[in-house]
Image 1 (spheres, rainbow, N blue to C red):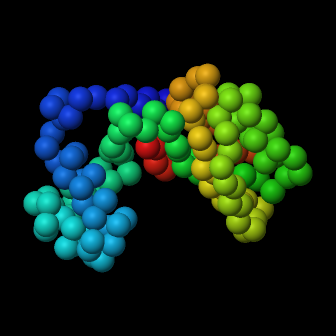
Image 2: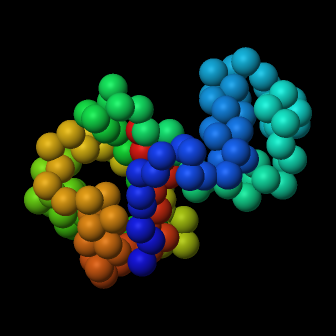
Image 3: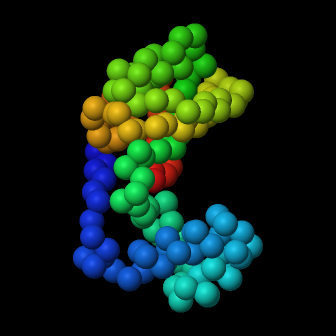
Length: 144
């Protein structure tokens, strides 16, 4: 089971902060290519790809946190409803839902959440979604 921590930057390798800087440059359009972003912040492309989906910045001013999760759903009636009920029970608020059409009887789903009033951790929520028969590849894409 994955666990997530908020850790003071001084305890982490400098590379993690540079990965976040590079991702921010790409997200805001300051640079168009990953190679330009990593060159600007002074890390290798390998370091960027290794950590880009694993390190995130938590802003003190945004404790009304948002998260983006993804998962795969078997093409069965009522399955998405069960996932949404699980999210609702945790007191997370659903902001958006994007479900693609099923291919080979499996549909990809991305949900954005407001975690402000969530009663449990994001780890608990992901674990609860994973226990629903018919869900797979449950992942936290990003959190702020």
